[in-house]
Image (cartoon, rainbow, N blue to C red; front, side, top):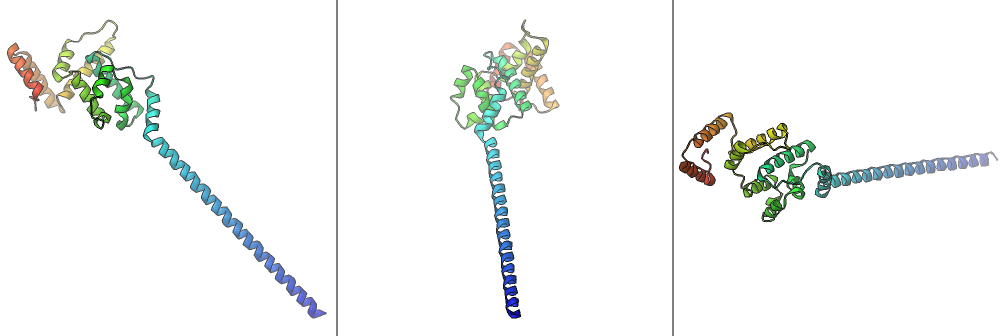
Length: 223
């Protein structure tokens, strides 16, 4: 009888150990499943984050984002060549304030170009048409805004009756800035040379002055 009781007790103990082992195994499996689910969830979150960043950085989304920001802030390019200079200057300042990526300047500018500028741009090589600096120089050149034109406009332009003195000063500043830029002046010494050169040129006889202007159109005398 005693032996039977000990055997039964041993069997119960073995069953108890087996149950505890099964329980521990189940808990281990559940824990692994939980960790795997958490890992998959984190992977999914990371994938969604990467896709969101990729979407934000996509060219199409960039264009839409900045295009919406510019819609009510940019006016159409003016027809008068002298006003185009101020228009470009305003556009560039706006791009800088909004922190627009430089690589999309040219594309964002297109809807606001005048009909003449759009026609000129249609003749530009497709690869070059996406470079803002190239497009800007080409338009100004085709509009015949040469250094001599900038200088002449700067010296002869007058304030419009509807124009404030502040606006007139901005126009003069733009013209002079573009003139200096077109002459490739990078230092105070070069600016001094340019001013003296223009003063001497203004004192020349008309026939000689025309000859100098002809030379300017084919090369840069100050280089």
